[in-house]
Length: 488
Image (cartoon, rainbow, N blue to C red; front, side, top):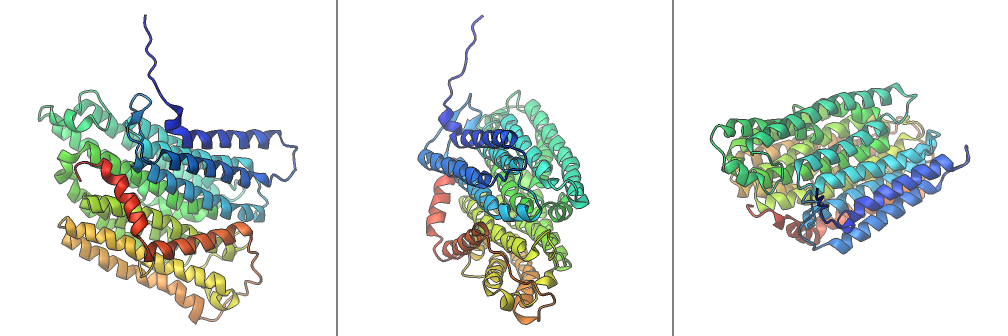
């Protein structure tokens, strides 16, 4: 019997391999270090691994093709998302050290789980086969389930982890059922590049099965991106999870889910675009509206940002509905911009929250601009960016998304999106009003600006402004990345 081993190149998964090795080394060092000794080098080691992964991704930019028996794509679309994941994880590591020390935690497994989750995100973005996509999804999800319940002595953290685990398992089930039906409808293939031809070449009896598979995939992806009506887990999980983990989930998990969502639907189902577009249209409007309206009533800053995250998922769904080249470009640009402005906002939340998240009410931000001018200015900038005000990256991202919708002929969707942006102004600007126009209700005292959090606030603030004033470079990179979609 002859066994054929497919040729593969480890360089194709170099960034994921580097992060995996780094995470394993951290776990070994944590296990072998003398008990009770401070392990202050874990953040630095994590950042070193992330820097090496970023360098490897940069060196691979411009490559094209597939590898590992055509299970993964090696292309600029993948690499663009690699940079988003690496950036989001690096910023999370930098805001985590002081936060964990305030809780008396300094665990190597925390940083290892962040890296393992990032590896799962990379596999999702690179997937050329739906089983590989599911593998990446599970690697990411299991790590995030554990991270959400990191503070085992905190009932809220336990609740967040359990809710995320149970509902996440349901969503994974929907995805698997969708893949199984798609496998039958396509005659035994789950390769993304083979699905369009396979689905078009089968009898009309396979069409209802395909449509049902598409609906189940939308449910599964809808849970991961927190779109309505699959968003119910988001506020509770975001509130209960450690704040640094919430920041990581808000940007990393959402970006990975949209990376897979866009690739699957743009590559595999071009012939069914008419059938699923109206469903995504309705989901986009419902997600934007529910997220923005519910955010108005929130007084907990983490719950407010959770509903804000839901609303932004709605804006990103508009880019999928547009299904044109500008829509794909705007999706990539907006996810990068959202990573910067959301992680910056959570960095401020960590500093204001102080030890053990003592100040998470929005009214704790009253007078912040006078007690701590730098923090107040940073939070105001991030709120302006999330609201989509010029000249920030948030404004440019929304401009691209709504322009793509208009270009695709979705005028009413654009009008509803703009109206939702106006609604969001209320709760974003309410924070700014509290910061500068209300007397302080609590004396926050001195804030310990750790080097990591200070660097994150400076880098994200600069990134939000520069990518808003000079968006051309990021636009060109995103345009280069989406050329893999021939039908757009």
